[in-house]
Length: 267
Image (cartoon, rainbow, N blue to C red; front, side, top):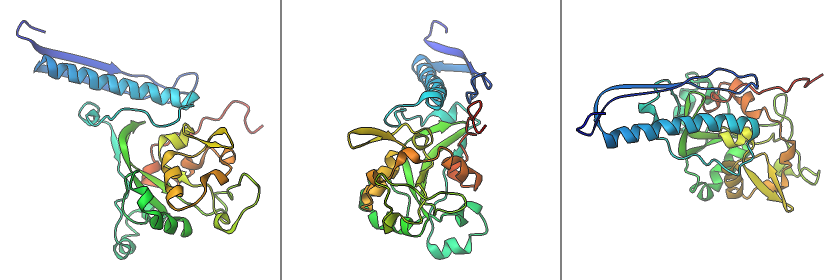
């Protein structure tokens, strides 16, 4: 930094690989040479701190995530600093006729087609009919992320809630009281592409007990459709559902990492 209040060089680096604890790690580098004001340099420093915070959160949430919700701050400026982020915007919903004509273009369109338009979390409550249609037809809805975030090299801007049928891939969801009324018969557990669902960091209160297994997007969507989320036994939800949908080539699930299998599991 010279005496005129200018910054002429900034270098940041964050690099790591897979540790002995099998943590998923990311890489971020930034090297600036030129002349910018101190205020602009401070903003760059803060943005890089956000990158580091995102990296550290990925580690913490994977190993021991018991928070109630997604709590990261908005990181809209990150694409200017990290050039290896792959956007995961997802499918922009189309009119059904146009969607049918283009089904062969994108494999993720053919699986669990998106009903309606992408919705904000607050607008879900006014679109219960769309959620009901997606539930009834074993398809999906798209929810805009209120705080876009970066996960394992992907920038998440939209989340996709899938309502899969039970069958070969997805087991019938189970209920708290053991009975399965008509509205739940033939349904697997709803799946969301958000990190909170994958890491079970969101909880609801059932009979005075805090229960993980869903996310705020599914919670709000089911409420909008008058489907009782507390009737579902979320404690029985398999952990690998987002990874299964990644295997089905759904764009919004491509960020999901390989599940970590504990030593001795399956023996």
